[in-house]
Image (cartoon, helix red, strand yellow):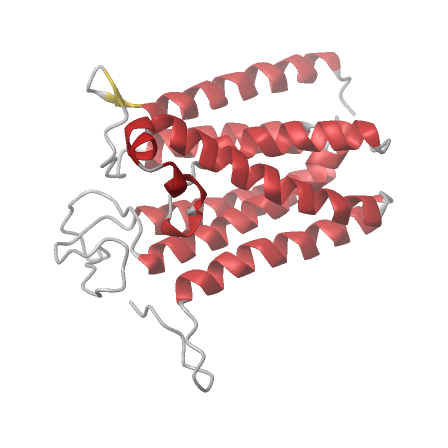
Length: 255
């Protein structure tokens, strides 16, 4: 597992940073094309991309800090050091969706339609960011002796171990790629605004329940010492999405 890309002169580019950069740039390009195809104001969408990025980082960091109060009470300046890691995906999604609705209402964009434009792009961005996490050696899975298990030996990795570990980030990246493909396939069968979002929430919820089995939740977020909080959130996401999709499925006449 290579940590550095080939140097350009004296410039060293980490694979982790490369994929994180891609996870920001590519979704913006895809969303811009989606807006053009749907007849939505592209300038407003590009402005929204900026606000969503800030909101997602804030929300993801806020939840992480909330789950680690002792660490940040001891040194509050650590809160702003996001380059050291510590972002919670669910927190970023919640603040991004809320920001999207507020901005859409302010500039007269259709709320759920706008959210749907972003969903596939966010999913592919999540895929790329998880590849970056994999190459950064960040929070891999449980010990498991499988042919595709990985061992981290580089000192540059965030976590340095020699034992075989589950490639949990690769599982998540492949899952995101699959969800992205499903969303593109279902786009032509869309029956109501918001459908792409809720289908995505359902698929991520189910995937979270399954992939969570392989994660090594070293931070110890368990309910009664048994069920990881991340899996509980995933289950709630899936259940909520099923309710919304069934409700709209009954409400919306079949074509």
